[in-house]
Length: 338
Image (tube, rainbow, N blue to C red; front, side, top):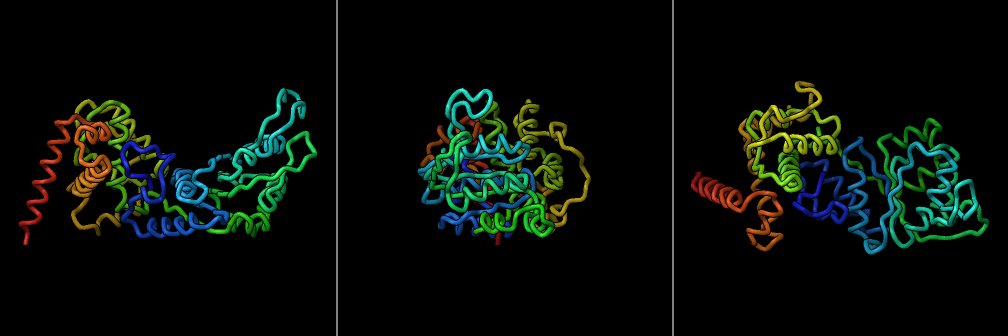
């Protein structure tokens, strides 16, 4: 799940910028759209690297609070004292080194959205402190007895099963119900084989642009390795693999020896799913169609301006012209088929 809009900053992406051919991802996006139309708290669940922060930003950008701030806070590995200071702010002299008054995340997110990442990592004391702020919108800066309020919509995320932690007594039940107004489950990349070609095409274009390269696609064997890989690190790993591959590539096509994967040949649910997809991945037709789809989207966005499209795609104008001729030839062949 990544916005397939070329150069658009992911921080500005809305839910409409996401394209998927996967049923589980379609369910995820539909639930996210429902969440964006409300002001309910949202709990985003998914493995590490699946794009939970990106989903949170898209929900915010698609909501009535889009003009307000989006403030992100990672709750993992913070002491309770630091948690107080980070979330609620502190007054000058509240502790050693506090030389000035500082606003906390809740106060900074007023009229907007506060995203609490890895919320399941909060200590029991931290959970207790944050419950009051979420429930009543009230908090106190460290070193102050003045009660302050903030109009904040809370989105939370974790890679743990919060319901299981609640049953085990490791997560407060009242806090769980307070943050779980709408649940959005982001599926892992290995369960989204039909989305992989377009995600690869989009990431190759993005990496090519940032590295000033003109990469137009993948060698067939390289495509095979990527399509059958299990992607334990999900979208985060895909991005790093493609960035490294583009950096190592000296031609206009990524070869297998440029792919720095953790391990090939490991079991993947995507392998069996791809076998059922018309036109086998080994033919690289899935990737070709994805690249063509991505080019069309970029051209539509720049209203057909080929110079701008080539710049956003990170390729030379001549390369884009060649790809457009290829797309036209493919379209003609398909029209002639009975």
